Image (cartoon, rainbow, N blue to C red; front, top):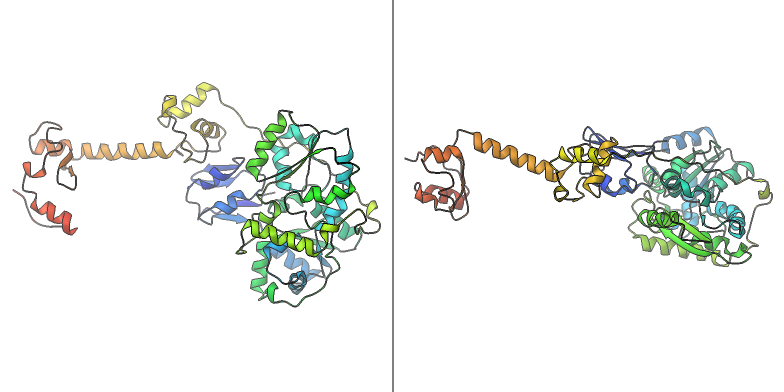
Length: 482
């Protein structure tokens, strides 16, 4: 499902989105950037870097407003990372703001993390499995399914906390509709993955802030409303290492190596290492965003940096008693009846690789006939000229997306005009020394080609007027030189 794309009116061909897209899922077509959904992992990186504000994001705000107008039993499931995204003295102020928007009840998604903790611990304790990758981050799930399908067997076949919580709220609490609120764009895609409809819509923190502002609601100024759905369960989940911290009390023994990786570049580097088979018996917690969920692409303006947001989340978790969570932590009666398993299947992105001759032909079209012509400057958005040639071959890039080539072409065109014009053109430096003369000027003064280069202009004629123009920056019009 398409979540992010670009506005035709605002895209200015700066290629910044291509440069920063970790999986190169952005295609340039007719000078317009567009996201190829089959390649996209919905990480939102392009959204955060676009300097032209050319991105468009699928919004569920109107859908949620409609749900609220038609149904009095819509529950909100808010990610615990809200503690770093909103300003408040007590979490009850955020609850109050959401209830003013129309939600019947407000719960923390961290309950979903607690619900699947036993499933996670069961996979950790399974000595028949070697390496295990957590599956709470949908962008990482898509990354593995599309670009590292050989590692799918390492993925924990369990739903995310969001889905688990939605399933619980509908089946155990009886809510007819559930809306997830968080910092993540990939969640907008995830709710459609299995067609289970555990979550009906996804709002980002950014969207909720805008909606509150539209309604004149400021969470920081709201009265405090207590909510039983805010428990001490798994509130460390959105920080790096939070998954392991949640399941740790449930482990029979800690026999696996534990690694936490956040940020897509680091995650991809790690997955490449994992493909080589050099890691064994490792518990791998992966999050697409640097700083995990505290730094999602749709956190919205907070005035806080990622590290301050992380500290806010940790402080909130400690204030809720999460540090002391153990196996006796609150779990709802009957939760054993809920099935939290899921299946991950390969969605492999097929990339066609041209032959060496085909690559050479593509490069030759932009004046690159030898390896020394391949500048690998990265201005086009690709790491090397060859990588860009492969993108051209796959229809992901246009042949002219080469700054050095286009500059050279523009200079050649300028030179052609100067060489061909019947008008005399003389280029001088600030000291009025001749740097270059075109053929028309050399013919006019009857001098051999290049013979007057670096000589004073007054060797040809009086240059007083030219010096005056240089000093005053004012044109002299209708005056002839003889």
